[in-house]
Structures are given as structure tokens and as C-alpha cells.
Length: 219
Image 1 (cartoon, rainbow, N blue to C red):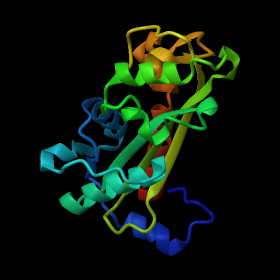
Image 2: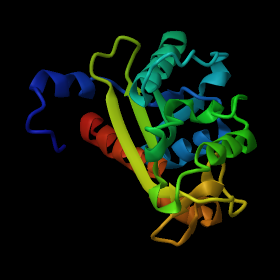
Image 3: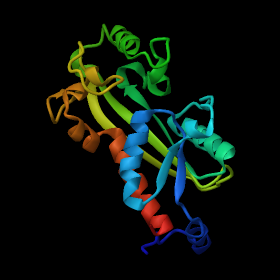
Image 4: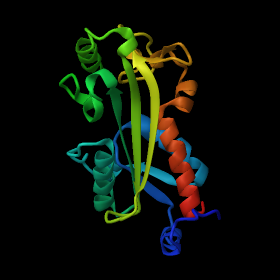
């Protein structure tokens, strides 16, 4: 098994001693569950949503994607006694100093209301010219062996683009109708699912996680 040259031997042994057959997804999002099941199916790991253990969503009190992902992963570990993986993601707009950021899902007031969030984003950018609307999606994944894991695996993926002036497309979710993908000259909501799932921020972070799990656990 390949190892990181700068990783202490005791740490490598610590990971190798953990037998992962099942892990908990610290989310009740069915779309995320499918993505994780498809990815980790290559490793013969069973991915179970925390809802099946009656675990309530953790309060996202962190001030960064990393903090919130750790909070969610630790919460799942505490209540299930199983390894867990958590996702925290959102949109950063340069002209808004990185907003909506960690508040992406509730930027328009009501949590998870895509229409309100998109309307609020357009309103906030109403005076910003097209050439100054650079933005990116961010995704942070955190894997924890247990609630007190001192060395969680943290993977971050980003997807560069910009914000257009009116929604386009009917695929995807969140800010996808407003997120312009320059290399494909369309919005994220106009991309075929297969294409989006190969180039998105979450796809990049998940591939990093897959590589780290193989490296550290020899699976």
C-alpha cells in the first residue's frame, strides 16, 4: 500500500487498524446519499444516512465550511458510534465578499428555498456589472473515524464560474440556474447530469476523499 512519506508510522498504523465496512452520511439529503453510494460502492462500503439512526441534523454554528462539516460529522459519530462523512458546501461571490457562503441554503430567508435564494442573489448583484460577477461553488467533505478523531480527513473542491443576470436551465438545484460555466458556455442548470457530476465542486471533493480512503485504509 502506498503511504504518505511525511505521515508518521504510528498514524498510518492507527488508520490501518480501523476496519471500515459501514459509514454514516451526516445528511438526510437523498441526492447526496446517491452520490456517496455510487462513489464508495467501489470500496464495498455501505453508506447509511443518519436519518436511519434517527439522528437529528446538527446546528451549523461554525463560521466556515470546514467547521460546519466537522460539526456535522462529529454529531453523526456521537449518535451512531460509526465512522461518518459530512458535506458542507455553498456559493461564494467575489463582489459580495464571499457571500452567501455558509449561508447559501438560507440566503433568501427560508432554508432550502431555491427560488428565494436566487432572487436574493440577483437583487444583491443588481448594480454589479457582468464582468465583475466572478463566483465559485465550494464543497468541503470531512471523514471522521469516531467523535474524538484528532486527524479527520478534510477534502475541498471548488468550481469556478460567474453569476448571470437571469436564470437559465431546469436541471440541478440551488444556484445552478444562475451559475455560468465558462468552459461549456452554459449555466450549471443546462449541463447534462453526467457532465455536471464529473466537473462540479462536490465531484472534485469526493474524488479526493476516495483517494484518501484508499491511501489511508488500504481499501
